Image (spheres, rainbow, N blue to C red):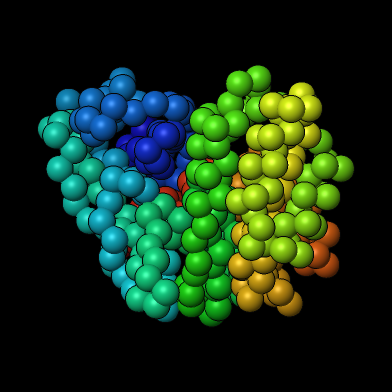
Length: 283
């Protein structure tokens, strides 16, 4: 039996962990949401709830934006949010904001806290991979600055839209084609939109295979991102926080630039960050 529930809430994926203190009892995941928070929470964790209100501690899109950088990743405690269900005592980790250039995060502040809890006294730059990829400069336990990119969301939108048709999303990535596209995009990032259309044209006119098309598309987008984020990763201690093929491609791309990066498991650091928030709440 759990005594609190940890939740990572994203618009396209929700994960939950049933917790007793800091011990994991169970876990689950959903990949859909209706926008009805009470209904979606009920579908995710309803059978874990008791008649009395259960503490649900969440990070991500459910919450407000709180502290301004530079600050610690969990500077403002937890916000109480009405879940629309009397069985749920919902507390949300507030996100972080940046004034110049204007930016925000909701959820990654918790992953940063989890990474730092697992890696004491770590200074450097974290690359948090997802639909939004975020480069975060961390020093002395504080978030100093950050920059966000929509690389993942852009790839997904193109693969489901203009470039959809024959399994681009499910294809394996051709690594040689990825490396070539990455180098080309980093050399001339201003041509990224033309390169993306070139992938479309090659598929229509030449029957470009999905693994190569996927590699060229993602390589072009990631190359443009790395060119823009160079002040973050050049000469820094680096760690990529993510899972699956995309996170590994970030590590490979950085290594090709002479910038080796450690790979941290995203689910693990997320849960560790929520444990840190729970400890703050418990006093």
